[in-house]
Length: 313
Length: 249
Image (cartoon, rainbow over all chains, first blue to last red; front, side, top):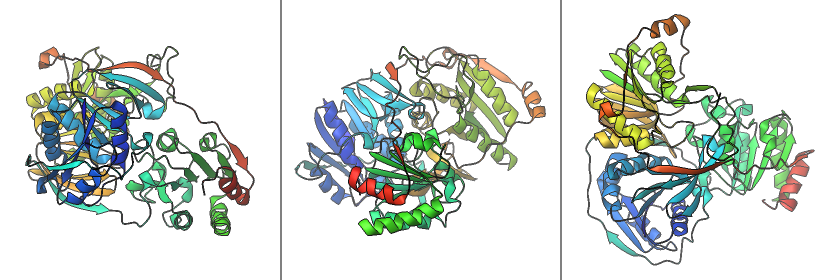
């Protein structure tokens, strides 16, 4: 077997999720190649070559791939993928965008968002917002799979010495173009890979109040998330949403503040190691999954939390 | 321009999902079914495009058993003009759904196809992208804003790092995210009127597509459940437990 892993990156750094996907590839078994498609992304190729377990890194460096447009990447990956038994990518918004295109161009099914490898053709994945786990078997000769990164422990980022090859296949479908982007600028750790996450919900009442969470997050080196209710209400931007349709997180510590715990939110954070809930409603469903629950008004509890943390950190 | 909207019949999002005791699937017997919420957003977007004078006709399509016609009628009550039901009792997986939709696209020649980004039953998030690939169209997935300008559509997409806007040549495929719009409710007079709107039924064979599932579900299980932990009295106790018991700070 041979597996092609599509690297997640921003043209300058390799996203850690790639290491989780390589781990899923190792669980399947076989030779693992990594494709880095982007523009001026040579440094990413070198980083990928150091990852444990990688046999070869393919670098497709062209303006057509600079903004990761699915129309162009889909054609590139489908062409390269023909030589492999499996094509894997992280189930982030990039992988979700281009991988179904790859599958359709190869005339194969896609298995989305796997959380476990049972065998080379059988995988477990959540359905119904995580209310059920399906074990599915893929019958196609090429398996196109997206991987939930938090479900697999990452391989070591250093220690490997894979060969790096340039790929000169240029696919420009010519039907789409990048216009602009508004990316969140933050010095805080990335939500999806942060060791500690503190999230606010509707109980925060407005976006201004999220500053209270920022102060706690700064003390803990935590990422900041939000429930769908807080995003829908316009308190904070969409990229902070944790849940079924937002980001899936599984940090060592997850602190839910003013979040009731709708199933869609739980689907995004219930694999966290330790969950803390602060909510004034003691009947809130979030307490059913929390290791430590504090029934309190968040506007009193969060400033106290900041003070107490200052004493012990 | 003509807009095609695909809708899926799924378990109502308010229903508590239960795994069958024999682990063959989720119990759907006597369970309330409804239009997939992301599909409602797709219908609403099409209706708003028509209200703005951008869309001239809205065709809504659904695939599956006879009962799918309920969801097509719902879309007609919300403002779609005409329905197409591709009737099949077979398991229509994403790739087959995309192939059926491609056949409908070739017949109807819409300028824009709008779908939900995923259905809340299988959570696959595939069909729109697969349709776009099979038809060679550009795709604006996870859309939070759709602006048609001449022969292009600008789609703002909700991506991991924030928002990204792409320009797509028409015809194009758009898949909806949560914040694209807030769907309206159908009024009673519109529900009555929808009963008289045209609804064509056809089979996959009529469209030249053979439905052939590639994935088989071996078992479906309830997820591991977390046990509720303890309630702490105050913030000091919480911090003490996090530091000395859980050792996570």
